[in-house]
Image 1 (cartoon, rainbow, N blue to C red):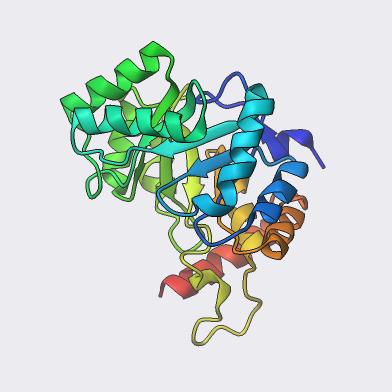
Image 2 (tube, one colour):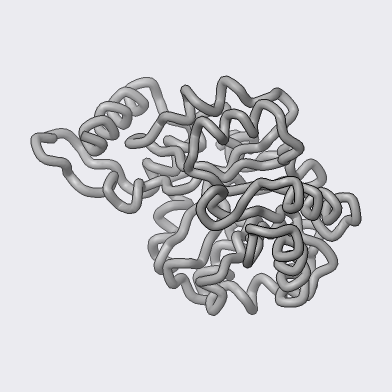
Length: 263
């Protein structure tokens, strides 16, 4: 397997070699599963309001023992105001027992957070101070994400992108500057809709691993997020992406299937 497929040094994380499938623990994976992910090279972790039980101890151990090899991305707990963005970062630093966050994001921009002069000023200050290495947002509003990709100080965009929702290829990717922002794709399975046979479809159905390969096969996507419920699901996903980028035939099938799922 081509090492460049599995690992990437991105503009948002220039000093670290990052495994391209990051791990979120929101859906119940336990400590054993998280440590198994680390053993297989996973070194990008999403720290959120949920899913800390299985992730907490392994991640703190990794940050304490090999900080230069591990990347953690966290969300502002209250991203509507500048003071909330600042306090959110400080809280994450305390929870994780680390001196800096690799990526700090305003979550679900426009719904759970706001890109205002106050929040922008605070997260830029956090980056300048060294407490945060990169700043980003998660966002579902694709036209607005395209505007941010074209002209903003953001280092990373966390966006919805999958075979049923490929609109980023039109609204975001063509507007992205060569140097930044990096792209972190999530909702790979379209909330599991891509794992079910749609009405009238008689061809093969995508697996979760297929969904991650679809995301990572885009030349514009740096990283993708997986949220397995168990170690077994994690192992299946990692085995799948080890197959490498999609072939032309696989691309054609998955895009047709995605259109059928989208309806």
